[in-house]
Length: 96
Image 1 (cartoon, rainbow, N blue to C red):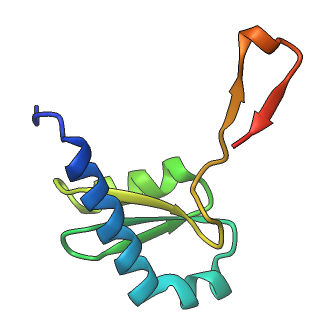
Image 2 (image 1 turned 135 degrees about the vertical axis):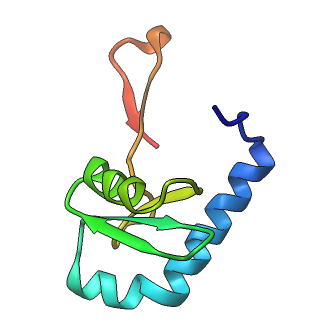
């Protein structure tokens, strides 16, 4: 089992993945695969596309035995939209 990564290593993976996606794949993928998911393996720059995030991750894991993977939702600012619920304000929820 690999040791856990640090926060700075995680930030580095995200930056590399975003850069690879923007430089190599963004224009083509946004035209061809809108609203699907891409996984970028940051060491090789390989990309794996699927309709669902789990499928894209499975494709990447099958092709690359070890490496750092970065998940992107094609055409969106982030892969997922998060909601926050505060028990203090039980009736309120907001999208971040």
